[in-house]
Image 1 (cartoon, rainbow, N blue to C red):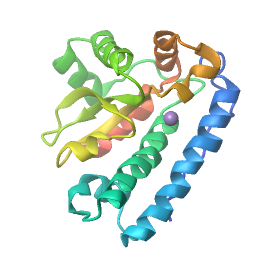
Image 2 (image 1 turned 90 degrees about the vertical axis):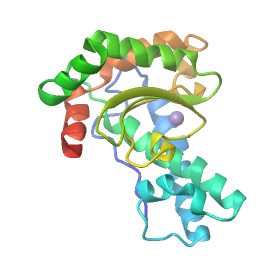
Image 3 (image 1 turned 180 degrees about the vertical axis):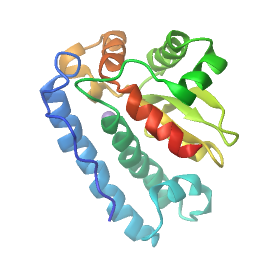
Image 4 (image 1 turned 60 degrees about the vertical axis):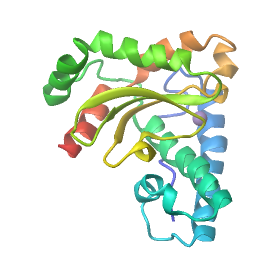
Length: 204
Ligand code: MN3
């Protein structure tokens, strides 16, 4: 059984950056549905017992195209939103320290430059999708964006996302309407770099 993350903040705690109705709908409806559908799909695929990471990393071995696509969509939706909702805090640490700070400075020049690169990819993603900060198989940081619920784990062995920025309209439309760049700016106001850093250090 794959469990949806529970929020460790109140649904109105990210106001005014991410509004209560959006959190309630996004976590309570959209993410809950992905979670239910993923559980059903895994059972159908005969993959019960595999981790979601194992499933997303090995999609090509699933012989049935409909089930494969279902696992990609629902598994991505399940995993991506777990990461998304886990990284927020009403009292976020605004910058990483330690090894993650060093890696970001080495790779991007500064935290501001890193945020700028992810934000650009998020704004440029045509239609529904995500922007990411991930590590590759050598532990090197990189940024990317993806369509629908596609996840960096599916791109190749050893890719692990650290930050997931949801740019589906359901993530921002109730508050920001067509102004996706304003939502992207708001995302960074509630992203807790301490949580990102903890995730990164577990990979080392
Ligand atoms: Mn979403």
